[in-house]
Image 1 (cartoon, rainbow, N blue to C red):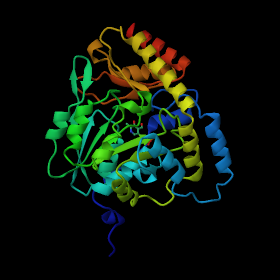
Image 2 (spheres, rainbow, N blue to C red; image 1 turned 90 degrees about the horizontal axis):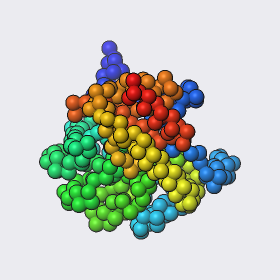
Image 3 (spheres, rainbow, N blue to C red; image 1 turned 60 degrees about the horizontal axis):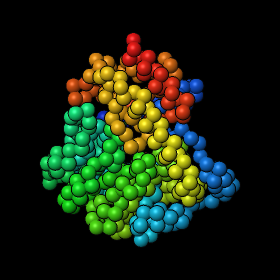
Length: 367
Ligand SMILES: Cc1ncc(COP(=O)(O)O)c(C=O)c1O
């Protein structure tokens, strides 16, 4: 008798399910809804990017190269030697896949600081790793990184430490000195800088890759550059480390259209500055308009989203999300934590959408 197919799957794969973003599916199904949930950019691609898409779309019959031109541009923008310091991915999500595959074996550990983005858990589970979550400290209406907690969580099985800079969903940065303390451990240390451009590359930890071979920076064009649908991300690392990780790449993982559109976006720094200015003004507007609602904790953000805790006002995040959806706005929920069920997150939308969000929240809290 033959064995059933289920017996052939790796044991750690069996409990896993396909990742489905139901909120993104909903937004595509009903385009009348305001997409204020996935940290996308509300502004469409620039004319330069559209031109590159058209130009290389006409050459879509050809295989891409290894992205040498765009990798050289990225290296230069970050003060690194050259293309061999840069590995490209189909979004930074794929870059995480390559990094995790490079280091993690079944039973080994990944340390993350929570609350945080979900891809670290997804990739860890896929490889049969064990995820160790160290919560941020919630004190005086602030979420604070806990670098001591991260360092104390290290065991002989720790293979990766990942910290987002700034963090999603809390929008804050870890102290520069704490990055050095973690880098000093020698353990592969991934710094996720998906949103760094909103605060500027001055806040980046990319310089650490020159001193510490174990530091790897990840970035994406999905956020400030506004190209989430194109899928382009990259990592920065020491040349030898980057090229070892590159050995795990799926051949031709980034298409010709995408890599040249990405180059056009990276070259359009004026366009980036405009998007960043718009975003940061809108963050300030929302923080100001909602900052005085009694019991609503607004977490100051240096990215394109804002986290809230309505727990101290006696409200639940899920009720706010439901109320907003009736007004046509999709927000993002957060699991209950720190004894509160009041968590939710908004992504900066267009000017009109942000005004509608403010009005909706004021209405909810005046009920
Ligand atoms: C912190 C963080 N890192 C990485 C990503 C992945 O982005 P992408 O795969 O589009 O590059 C996201 C997306 O929301 C994120 O919030």
